Image (cartoon, rainbow, N blue to C red):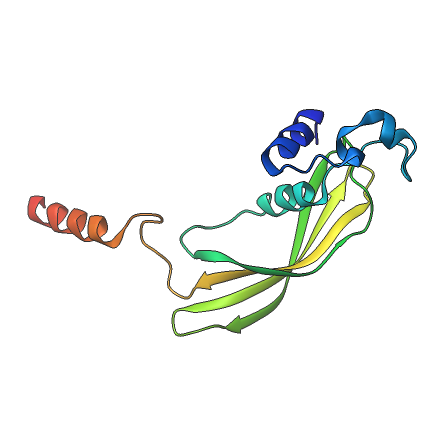
Length: 145
């Protein structure tokens, strides 16, 4: 996590809390230095999960989100997941819930939550391609074959 990440996130979100943006103020805080915004840590950690767009329909929700330790500027994070629940949602979708953890270079868990995704029960043939284009392409390819 870089200072640039933190400043850009301050600008993007308007979250200019001095704990994130003011070095002098942060020196007298509980941790003695600036912290990376928790919402940035969550955004980065969940983006590290490899998603398969042929089955992923949407982010479904997050429960029990906890920031267990601070994340500092210049920390390196990685993500770890474990599927903890699978359930039906409707005829075409299910919900996969994982325990998601963000871990820093000191092997400290900085974030933990239950992260749920809405998953298609049938894999898309061409992820991200609208059905009309898909049908048109199949028709065209069929004529030339």
